[in-house]
Image: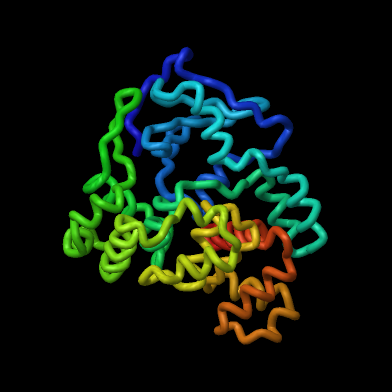
Length: 297
């Protein structure tokens, strides 16, 4: 739980939404990011190497953070929440599908974040054969153990560990945190990034196919994890992660998808990318989140 803190009014700034729909709760707790916490009306996360607190207000987002880079914070937060994307265009395109329309209406304003590529890769290496609660615990333990401490408003948390920090820590230290076999994948990825063998940030500008090929060189990264990484941090709206939930949804709601063998993830993904083009990733995330919420109710 977030410690009780007092945020002075002069620390709070405003980021206008300019009429764009926005659902902060669904955006932050839909399974694409794992370090946000809620306390009363504020949500607290560690992004840009510092603690940031945000909440919805009329016409925009109120936010508070440390005073470093005061002028840069609004533009960085706008980029993080992908506020440059016109959700109206996404909804107009995807609403032609009646099965999807219900999820679009229910979670209207849920946005796909534009996260840091290294942090996203690290998170989804932890996500294999796991669930949101366990991923959140694994990521937070790793940050607390090997990240840099940052403070704001009387609270201290930790940044994501750098590749070098994880290489120095080694596989056994990660296993001791309960990461199991994922520890090997994390250290292997950290070594490749630290040696400059892969430039994750540069993959934002790469084509979908080139980014997919580059990511799948990393040990432990298959088609699903690669598509998660591309969707949540690399500006690839056509990325379509296929897991058990998505396979089940497609078979239940989309008879034409049954022509593709459900165990063939790449063919299932290719079918969905064509059917939901050009915003297959948004279709995926709204369907995924809707199923997760239904499963909890």
